Image 1 (spheres, rainbow, N blue to C red):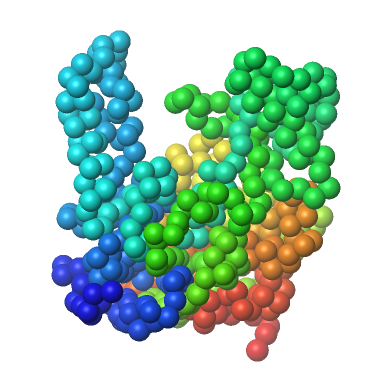
Image 2: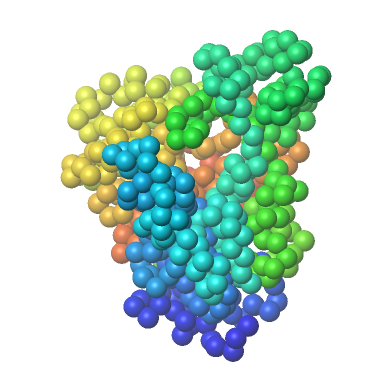
Length: 503
């Protein structure tokens, strides 16, 4: 490590906050004591400035993020940061180009014959060459691994998403258009019914095919059948719609539950990566175990929130009820009444209600008993989710969004969201045999997966040190989760929690 101190490397156009100074100084003090550094940075900590400071200080460094959105945010903030994007992000302005792979429709059918000299190709190849030689750069997780953009130091932003990304990379997909599974196959039980009804000759383990691709596809069907009947599942099995060569197609996904010994993890940090810095508001030793890093020397750095706890209270009300599936019919009317009371209390500000899709349907049926709420509510389904979210975010009226699957990835600063309700603690479904098996062999895994989602959900509002907003957790099972797994809740979160009726 160069002798230069770390704080002078902080971006000159920004003034470092105390939380940033403290985290960086602690990192500098402990740099020679560990190889993996876990920096727990709450919302509004300014992770991008910390990442840039580490990159400049470490001299040879790759910064990686999980999404194009975050890549663009970094680029907008730091003009001199070199970014390598996917091939498809480099627009070839004139031709159907084999490098950019994004043809202009007016020239469809023409081929780029300029020896990769068109604008899209030139920009892509130029950025790729720079990425291989510059001391530090930024890319998303996939580009980093695809081009092996290894440096002495790796900084991972939003590191809590790394596990799910690696699972997706290691996952296996059985496409409907190739394997012709029926339209009625929509969940794990349907997959089991379909795969077990196939004749023996459908599985590649029983005979040799000349067509290699056909054999591999049938071999994957055999793997699916073996896994779905396994008493000790290794994969989560889902039916989803995904992109296949640019077109939407349904597929059955086998996603590994445990990635510790999979090659994807080894590709992320081979031997030439000497220091790994993981930054997130929600990362713990359970994630380190899952990432297969437990055998390394780990240094944990916990930063305080730059938002005072008085400005971001988390309240578990005395009237909280369990919304476990068996109790929902009895307790959803109580939830509706609670939401109505909150809407009256927050009559001039926007609010967000986190519910599952199933709970949203039940809530929709009873919320009609409160006609004063009707003009404020925005509801969505799976197809119009982001359209309704944007409608809510752009509205200047005190709307209330009944939101499903929005614990992550949305941003509601200031008046865009002043209050929210976590109606149900997002426990992973034990109805899935794979989840049930993992929970049976590792109770901490099950609790931590739930806690991560709770922490992410609580961070959707109150996004800057000057912001304020309140989160209500209506589900009474949160008390058990909170008290029995105290070590997994960061101090900055604990400082904000009030459980009514408890001292």
